[in-house]
Amino acid sequence: MFSVSKGKFNWRMAAASHVGQVRLRNEDCVACDEMRGLVVLADGMGGHAGGAEASRMAVQAWMERLSPVAGDSLVEDDLRHAVYLANRAVFMAARRDPSLRGMGSTLVAGCFRADGVLLVAHVGDSRLYRLRGDVLECLTRDHSVLRAQCDAGMIESASEGPAALRGLLTRAIGVEAEVVPDVDAFPLEPEDHYLLCSDGLTDMVTEPDIAEVLATLGGSPPVAAKHLVDLANDRGGMDNVSVIVVSSCTSVRLGTELG
Image (cartoon, rainbow, N blue to C red; front, side, top):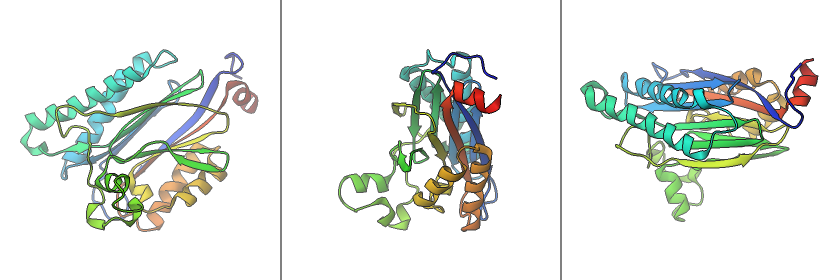
């Protein structure tokens, strides 16, 4: 039974990652800290060891910056600084080691606060979705050539863009000396389900199917996370696929369920 005060939020979370059916190595990296409300997912690029190293370093830098201070005191500038440190770690490593030149990573991350606020930061085309009721909404906006063309009215939707442009990013961790993340704050509600994912999921599994999985299995994040990864692999698994599923509720409700 939880002893926290009434009205405080809590959550369950779980992560899953798989190399997929085609790639030889997994260049994604995920981490979640349920106690501190921290989640982060990175999709590396650069080939050979570079992609895996970039995503690992980005995730490590993010967690090391925020884990000691996680809680309701976290603000948006804390997330910006964590992204700055992640970017600097990857960029400097690539400068030191010629074999890592050209590496980079996406990053999508969240800080769930017990006062009912979700802080989100992202760079690249890894995404964060929220299922509230029966409505699935993507809370991030891809930093990609396809997204830019869609915003400019050149194409009606990113899904209609040429295959050659898929995966071309307009921002990434570690490619330049500095990067500007998108940082936002969203109110939590009980029974929300959140999904962080790499494009290895969204390229294989449609948003309606994602919504169905979260609606039926989101209350058990480990089951939902595994099922989403299995779906991507069953449908071809053309890339590494990684997910983090978070289910929010009030502490009183959670304490009742577990008590």
